[in-house]
Amino acid sequence: MTDQHRVDTLGAYGNPHVPTPAVDELARTGTRFDRWYTPTAICTPSRASLLTGQAPFRHKVLANAERNVGYVEDLPEDVFTFPVALREAGYNTGLVGKWHAGTKREPADYGLDGVHHPGWHNPVDHPDYLAYLAERGLPPYEISDRVRGTLPNGGPGNLLAARLHQPVEATFEHYMADRAIEMLERYAADVHDEGKPFYLGLHFFGPHLPYIVPDHYFDLIDPESVELPRSIGETFEGKPPVQANYSAHWTFDTMPIEVTRKLIAVYWGYVAMIDEQVSRVLARMEELGLRDDTAVFFTCDHGEFTGSHRLHDKGPAMYEDIYRTPGIVRVPGAPEGQVRDEFVSLLDCTATILQLAGLDAAPAVDSRSLLPLVDGEQPEWAEDIVCEFHGHHFPYPQRMLREDRYKLVVNPADHNELYDLETDPDELQNRYEHPELAPIRARMMRRLYTLLRERDDRFFHWMTSMYDVGELDYDPMMSGLDESTYVGR
Image (cartoon, rainbow, N blue to C red; front, side):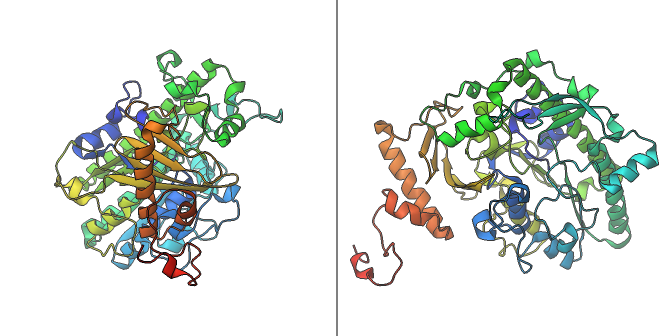
C-alpha cells in the first residue's frame, strides 16, 4: 500500500515515462481494476475503512489527527477489524510502515506485529530507523533544494519536494522494504514448519508530498517529458469557492509553471523508487517459495493532485485525481492479465482478504469480495459507486455518486457539481445548472439519496428537503407526529 498515489503514474495504467516494472508485472500476472476508488480521499479515514470494511460515516473516524476538526481519532475498542479476525483464525499478522489509522491505539492493539511508525510522513527520527542507519554505517537524513511557494499571509508555503542527501540504501523506503523482508522470512519459516498462514502489510509513506528523494530519483525524469494535466488551466468558474481557497493554500500560483513540471517529475521519480522496493520484497517472496500460495494486493489510500486543478495534496474537491486510484490483485490460480471496469473500492479489500482466509465477511458491512471478479466471473455488480468526505483543516461534508459517464457531487455549503466525464474527462466544466442535463441531475440525485438511505448515511436528511428526491414515505422531521401526511402518498 502506498500513500497519496496517482493512478496515472504507473506503466500498467498507461504512463510511458515512469519505470514501474514490479507493479506492472503484478498487473500482467493478476487483475488490474480500472475503476478502483477510495471511500474518502484522506489518509486516516480510508485506512480505518480498510481495517473495518466500513464506510467512514459508519466507523466515524473522519479526519486526520494532525488537523482534526473535532471528530473522533480512534476506532471503538469493540469494532470488527480483519487483522484481529485473521489472528484469531491462526494467522501471523504483521504491518511494516505507515499506520495512521488512529492515535491512541497502535497496530499491536489490532494484533499486528511490527514496529509502530506513527504520523503522516516518513518518521526519520524514529529510533528503529536511526538504529538501522547506525548498524549499516549509513549517513543521516539531510535535504536541500527545497521546493515551496508563498502562503496567502506571505509566509513560506508547505514543503512540496526536496533533494535527499542519502544513498537509496539509507532511505526510509529501503529501510521499510528490509524490515518487510525480515518479517516475511520469519513468517515463511512458520509456513514451512507449521503450515501457519500469514498476512503482511507493507505500507509506504510515499509518494505523499513532500517528495524527498535521492539525486538519482530527483533527476530521473526529464521535466520536459512531463505533459501537464489539462486541468492546470482550471479557472474555478462555477466551482465551489473552497477550491480556489485551497489552491491559494497550496501556493500554486506563486510558483512558475516550470516548477510544477519539476514537481511532477520528482513525484514520478518517487514512484519509481518505491517500485524498486516493491520489487525487492516480491523477489524475496519468490525465493522463499511463497509465490504459488500467496495473494498480493497493490493499492493506496487515495490519490494526489500534483498541480491538477491548480491544487496539491488532497482536500474538499472530489475529482478523479484523488478518488480513482490504482488497484491490482493477484491470486494464485486466477486468470492472468485481466482488466476489470466494474466500480470497486478500497473497502472491498477487507471482504476479499476475509474470503481468501475462509472467514465470514459479514461484519465488513460496506465491503464486497473481489474474488468473483479476480476469478474471471461476471457477477451482478453495481453500476455506480458512492464516496464521501468530511473535512480536512475544517469541516466540509460532501457526497459523490460516480457512474459510467457522469459524476454528481453534493456540497451543502457550496455549489453542487455535475461532470460529464465523456466530454470533459478533466472535470473542468461544472454542468450542474445546465438545463439540458436536468434529467441526468434529477436521476442521479434520487439515486444518491436512495443509496444513502439504504446505508443509513444520515447525510440524506439534508437532501430530503433541499432537492427533488422523489415522493417521501416518512416525515422528514422524524417527529412521529405527522406521518399520515407522507405515508401512502
